[in-house]
Length: 183
Image (cartoon, rainbow, N blue to C red; front, top):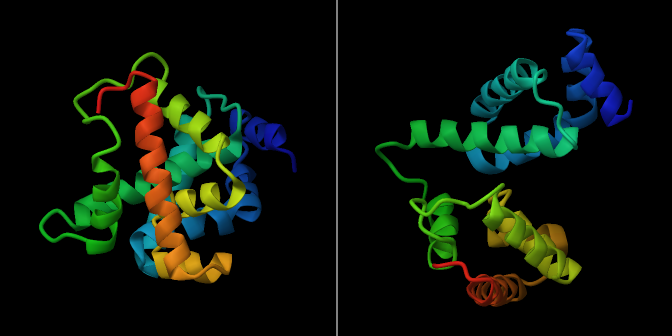
């Protein structure tokens, strides 16, 4: 089933849309959510929330890319669930990943500009990276995989993964500064 057909199922309020979404993207959504929550039960609860949110927001939203829209909702739901769970105790791995980007990305109090200017700049930057550096960066900061997990899945040494992440963060910082982003 094509993405536009899947979107049409939601617009026609056909309940099979959820099953089709799970069939086509369930594995990818679960991988993303598990990477953040690291708990099967929390993952299943979160995925239920994701499917509910898809059902609640389509319509009126008609995403250009259903897959990207579903992944963004899954990531947002997982991070919100994690924040609620960890309000008093910190998840060291997630906190470390976010802290690594702290000096590169603008403060949350700085608005993202018209239509997500920062997001567009980061996407443009990532598009200019080599495949390996881009994959490593996305696995670390989008999927929150550990250096060890990235090393195993990509077949690189942990030292190479760490070096690539460091180099990419430095390049991103320089790129954002050149584009006039106040860090």
